[in-house]
Length: 560
Ligand code: ATP
Ligand code: MG
Image (cartoon, rainbow, N blue to C red; front, side):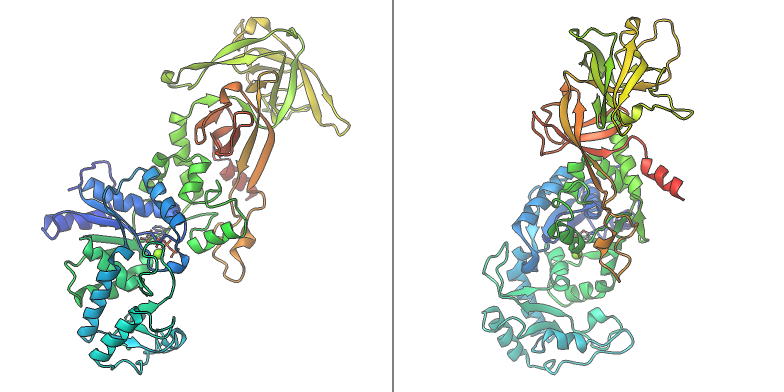
């Protein structure tokens, strides 16, 4: 039984429990089989957590197998990124890194076996004609004129296909099943095609390549996979999966079990679409922090723990798995609430002059790095006569319930002093350029000496000591919940033009300069941020991972 009492059960785990109890399986073996034709995304994370998670919990084994049968679209860059991402998520394949292409020789031998048994034949129709003769859901297909070639002729042609004697498309190898099957996948599916194309793993060794339906089941069997977990679109392929295994001398017969794919609101998850976003320059790359890719989420500031937590919460079922982005965001918020040190940064600064504070004076205040966890320690935050505060923390004519700074009002500059606004300056457009305050010297550290109530507390950064920084603020990549739903227009028409806003005149406290990429912080009152790889000590760059609260839901709520 499962080793992990915390894992939430699901129909797959129940099935594994039953297989183990009945002795049908001794050791659970799974695989995660990405095709290296793009970067992994959050949907893949669901499959990774399931496959590696099940293997871990049942003390079994999980293979990372590259499903690399389509050399045109595959690339070593993708292979490297997939390995990096699986590791980063916290899973380890140990010595079980394989490729479907490792089995090309064996796959060829199983194909020969099918031919010898009269279960496969070389068909010389072109792909368009094969497709046209496949029939429809209501009409049977028609048999290929090459269907009754002799075994000898088939063996000879198949060997010559492999030897490179024919151009692309001249012949294919097809299974000989049933052109009248109600399941279109069973109507003599193509098993091999000719492609004179170098392969990222096997180079020029092959010019015929096996198709997914033939390759996957045999690769599973060769690795001793017990439970081959895949997404629902493969349900109709299961009879073919079983047919290939039943008609070849493979060492075992794995069970294919399907679960529903994850879809996230306001993004797309198909690799074809993600590739277009990258190629059309809609995003800066596969790791753009707005992308639903693992590397994008990582750059955005997501942690492996938050993604695994998310995958646990969405669960595994057979029903539609459209999930709100806010669920993913609440997972990272919860994680960073515990794990991110606090700092002060001002994203949209306006100057505040403490006119009662001597020009040549400076002091520093001790600030806690985490309000609830002393082990985070403290740091010193420098202060002087001029500080910057957030522009929207000051209003000339504030509405009710606005507790921040306004003319005549007193607020707390966090950790520093209570200050009272005595005036302000504006430019010719009425935009505030400077705010004037006096401070209460007896309120050092930000405490009211006489216990008077000061409702507002705002953050600030010393003008003299602050470090100028770039802060990248992200919003949803698309303005529609399901950008892929409308097939009459390009999904890219639903891109959100405001998905990235760059605050280039942000100011951060000196403790934030020189931090390494991927370090995460809470900027007090603003949200969670992480250091972007574009950072430098002289010009730190931060990404906003997520705001402190689900402001987006609020915005939507108001709009309704
Ligand atoms: P494509 O979009 O190119 O068809 P894919 O998204 O299916 O590809 P693969 O590389 O074939 O990508 O996926 C590897 C594994 O991850 C497969 O077992 C697949 O079922 C699973 N997977 C892919 N997308 C999702 C998703 N959105 N939710 C859950 N699992 C997924
Ligand atoms: Mg796929």
